[in-house]
Image (cartoon, rainbow, N blue to C red):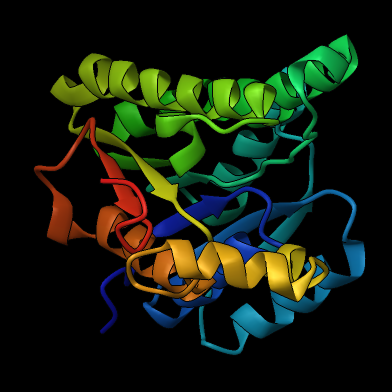
Length: 248
């Protein structure tokens, strides 16, 4: 019996990186997994088969969580297909880095829609089901940058800081219905996105971290298992930093 046996989870942006690691870890722990992808169609379809191999129900949905109506339709489809929804993980996110003086209005708006508005959309859509069940765990992916800021990422940092305030407010509103809401703030995590960067730059980042290494996507997934499981039933409204002590 896994820590998540019998639970149904919806994970946004799961075709690669951290989202994919969460989906696999959830399936290993016995959860039925619904997940979304947008551009990586082949990766999304391959993941469906990979998850099903763990003996759980798995289904991928091509959906844009930043679209209010699409998010509502997504949650309704998941509830219809799986019979309920116990855990919602908002992982979908993008970056459009630039110095503020060069940042366009479009790159600000796009970040806010994809990173922050998507959380509002999916959480709002999922609350009816969770309130009826009088149970649920919502996990929103923020970032160390949302807590400490970062030059060249004013848009990204603002969106991720917004997720923290949003998550704390949701926890206060839904606590009486036994619905928990927490945020996870990854530090420097090594994924496909970081593999294309200059090795010297990446090593410089590793050296600046007290644990002297980047994190693995699986280490974020482990935190998601904890917050989605019954091991954390009295933890809500918190930001869990997973960053090797780079920010404390």
